[in-house]
Image (cartoon, rainbow, N blue to C red; front, side, top):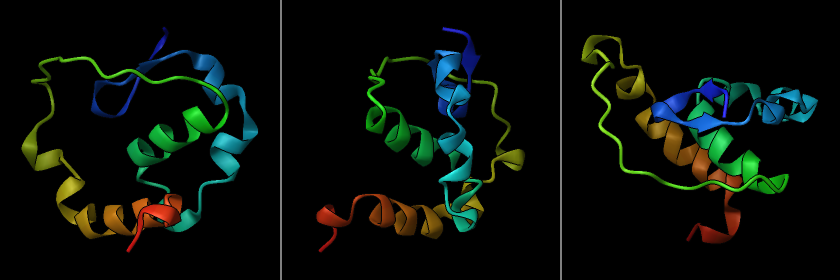
Length: 85
């Protein structure tokens, strides 16, 4: 594992060697890398596992989640249309 990303995610850098990781995400959702990574990795056969970790280094005043909350729901629905309804 050699990349630390959204939410403290750690993954193999080969995921980012795929052009589609950068070119297939709709521009409207470009900043929602956590959802994109969580959807894209399994779509190309890269497994994900959840681990319990304590993350204390994100300063609340720099957390952009507060401004993209509604957009995250929209993007989730875009990525998982069968789960909407």
